[in-house]
Length: 261
Image (cartoon, rainbow, N blue to C red; front, side):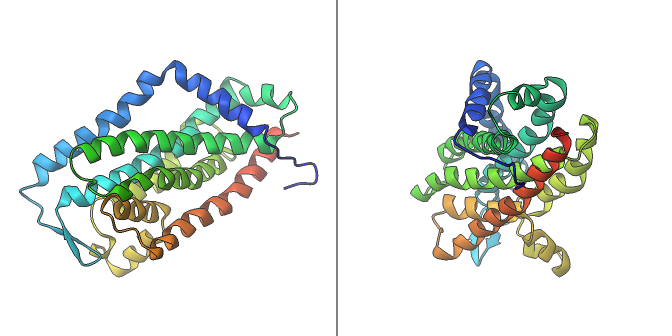
């Protein structure tokens, strides 16, 4: 942070502002996390159940849907946080001029940006909770450890929220968000252990996939749903925390260059 940087509990006022806006359209925001897992599980359950044999995960044979369903929670947490801190934050910054209005108050830039990232993580937590209810209701999260999906989604949301805000800080127009989504987020969704174990990839590709944050988020969500959380799972949590700590200063520095003249 720069010499004039300041961070206090005032950032919660920005978070609360976003929550109040969210509550006005909560029905629309609740529907996708409720319906999306049903559509995915129906499509893959009916379409793939007779085509895909058991998947081996860390030496444990699993039916494909049992393997895929927890990762769907992780992927949704990624999408929610990244979209909130890219498209939604850009709209607040560029079109609605919300950031300009907030900077005219005693709030500091650091408080505003951290609040945006925490709000993105909150959206991840809300969506993960709704999806977990569906996944557990269908019998794909039989362990009580599945409740850990909420803090797991919040941690993943912080990592992807910081990443999204760093992208927003250097994005000139809203259309340019298609580039990181196409080149980074979508490949992560497809190849980070969401649909199949990463060891099914060539060795070089498996190493790249295992370095991606979604891989670690999916591993945590899958372990939680299947009751396999162990002390070794902390490694995945630490990797997500490292992504958050790496991208947070980039987001703060980039937004300071963009907003403070």
